[in-house]
Image 1 (cartoon, rainbow, N blue to C red):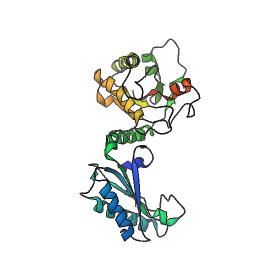
Image 2 (tube, helix red, strand yellow):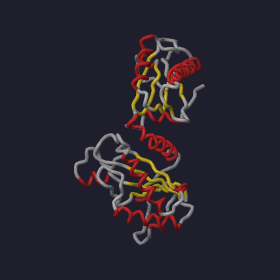
Image 3 (cartoon, helix red, strand yellow):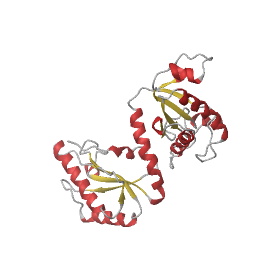
Image 4 (cartoon, rainbow, N blue to C red):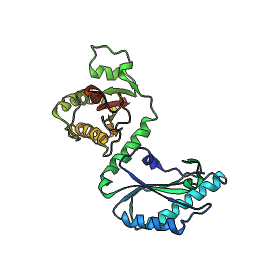
Length: 281
């Protein structure tokens, strides 16, 4: 039996997060004196941080049920140490993965609890981290196809195209530009977005996801792609589109059209893009 924690995504997605691990002796769910002192020192240095996720692990010895229980008890031990010391998300939960996820052949390194957290100056990223995970999981459940894969007549308007293609169709928006290193939309971007505003008004049941991507750097440390996607959503909201019809997500530079670093400005422009996926019609 395993306890699943919805925010396990923090391990893989958020570039801005921090993590720290504490290690346990064989078959023990309490830290030894050395590791306990490490934890106390970490707590003292992180009074202003915010914990987002805690994951417990064991080595491969013992049965799955035993290891699941052991990993959960290790997590509970750490949580009790952190209580009233460091802030948590209001919906904080824990996960014990047992031996299911062993990251190394050296078993001693698998007997651990890892805390994923944000430092004070990073806490503003929390909204984007949670949102990106939730939307990404939603997108995982649908089949996504680029609109260019369909037989589209050049005479069709955007509204006609939207009416004819299926849910999951992906559109790459043209001329969506932002101020340098910012999520502030430039005026020409609003001209392009007004085309989608018209379509959203024409089809009141249409729901979309706005995807942001950046170029040039391997990691989106400040989740700029998420901030930019949200800026597009905010513009459409400001024009009267209902919030339950719009979602946003940022992928950083994890889905480039061209290899990073790009060879020229054109490749950078193609990587630095905004896309729309038809979620419901």
